[in-house]
Length: 352
Picture 1 (cartoon, rainbow, N blue to C red):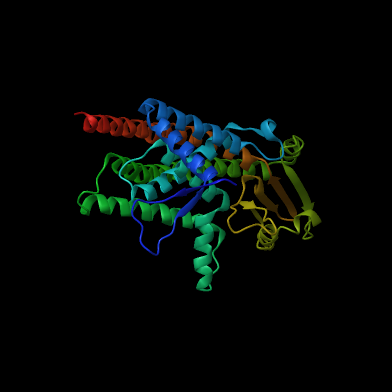
Picture 2 (cartoon, rainbow, N blue to C red):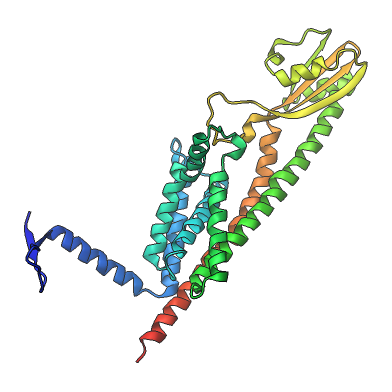
């Protein structure tokens, strides 16, 4: 390998020459020239390039490893977009603690860190590790608290510095602080409205309907069961059919009706998955609706395995479209304004 010696003008007696390999010098020169070329682009071009990069990477990450392009779904694309956008905002907030302005190379680096953090689940696993230090095992309900606590800390700390620290304000810091706080509140409101309120209302209505036809007369009951949408059981006596005996919650429900003359009951349950990670929630495919009817010696059980997925699909798509639209406007629209402001500010300072 060919080397080049770089000797400073002033050297102490105990200071020797510094040898730098030529390939590294060339690489650094090429990288510096590339960065300078990017910074010469207009603010429209920089914002447009990052938007294209963001959507391109999101599209590639949304493709399933097994099926590739054939398994592509709009829901998964929009879901990944929201996750990547939130984590990009989080690490942009960390960047804003140290830098007053943003450039295209820096925002691309922030995006890369966000992708890596999401892939390894860094913040949630760190939260789990801290809890294990104190001999506390976290539950699945806490699987996202590492992300949430870090996001809250970054947003609130930026807000406090903007309020109390003189000279900290800049256009970039104001934008990313407002985005983190407002978009987080917006996401919480959306998730409370769509998955919790709408999904619960849909499932409750279906549960009431299923209770009604489970307790109906024999002809209609058989007709509904023959449609193939439900899994139906009907028996007389106290002997529970073997396929139902593995569902402990259902068995307990039936046992609690011993001595009851007539009643209809039901619930929304889920099938547990063996060996699942604490960071994995309950998938819609695991949920089901079960109803039970007792009339003297007659017992009926109806299981609906597919409606939870239908309800989730009906609720998820408008949620993702609504969230993605606002995310595009707030983040990329704000980034466009920030880059415009920064470029015009530098142009004004460079004037003689």
